[in-house]
Image (tube, rainbow, N blue to C red; front, side, top):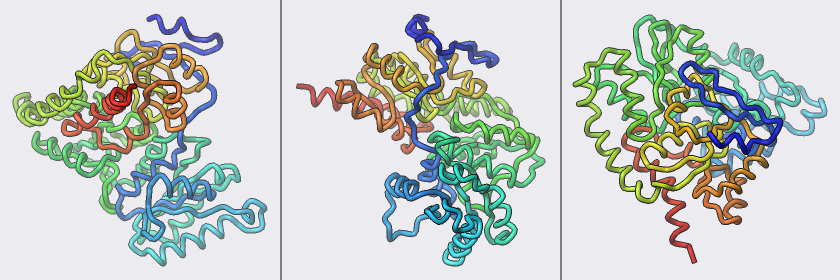
Length: 430
């Protein structure tokens, strides 16, 4: 592996330490360029349809959510911001009293809310406002009509997709007990994609529940008989809490592309004893469609180089998909965190020449991008325009989280997301 020769002194190289995976990983600690965990509310508020996300933060938090979610001010969204102002910061008002008042007014106006999440932000963390205790206090007042939970979406503690992890982790202690054997799919997906997975498992004879459920009162049960599959690689805290309740993880590829989705489904089918011929019959048609859809973009992607800068934690499985199914050549695959236990199967399938990096030192990573000049760089919004100005083609990492990209039926759409900026560059070439 030649890549480590470019590593600057003082930056740690380490192995993943995971059974079955001994890939070296460059660990960098420096300036980061990522969104905060509040961004997860943008897709979570659509997923749990009778929940409300109340951010306890500043006007900046409110503007971020308003612009990211694109909700009109006269709509009735399922999120809002309790703004911490100068009176709160100066100690002229009791923040807990103010929060109790805001919650009471919200629930009086919106009695349809069955689950209320208090979401911590940088300002609430800085003034040491204990939202977990506040949630316990408010839950005693408003439950059972409304369950009140709390989690942190602060940029001090979380990055981008970790907001979803913190939210689902806060749900786990409230899930009812289960004694039977069930499959649990963990992660928030668009309803249509979720339905595809549940339907395929049902055709195999496997009853699958999903966390989070679409209604507060329909959250799945969990117990020693629960076997779970992660739909997203960033749900590490949620996984730990599920295992504390007795659930057991099914190691699998993540369901990106035809290969990843087959591996994802096959892992559960093996655990639940699905006959091989039945499994093949269920996936045959959708797998064929997936392979045909991806093949349409292979000519545009094959032989092209790509670098992933750390953003969403989806980077390793996406790089595996692009390498195996689209013929792309990953140069560097960076991720904010690499949970080797969950990603071992993905990491083992990446080419040996790939530089794996965890964490971020944005200046050093940009130096490596300028040195290697990949055909495509996947990065955050703040880095894309400067790189484009330098003649490098980029892909917004956030689009890969907001778009339906999991499963057989979305495999072609996933490949197109990477082909699109390359084709656009060809059309605009002078």
